[in-house]
Length: 78
Image (cartoon, rainbow, N blue to C red; front, side, top):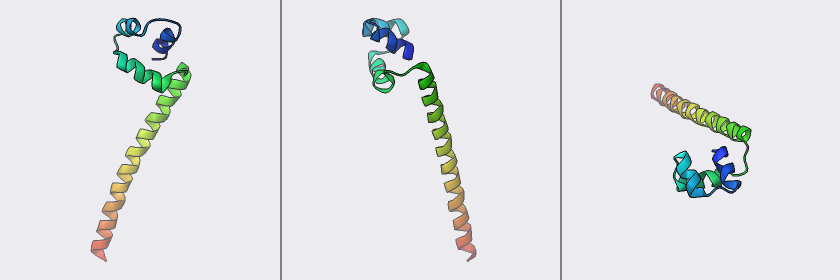
């Protein structure tokens, strides 16, 4: 991604660059809006953080279900 963005920043035409790398122009512009100005290490860090956030969201959902089930069991006993 970063390489493609930098290629266009260096003066290459968007359409030609997209065809060369097998992506659509809308994809290029989405990448540009999200990742313009980033270095590879920053993008890698961002992806790692996003993956960790997704993992934590799954954990939270699982714990919330467990909590709800336990509350349900306790309310039946009392």
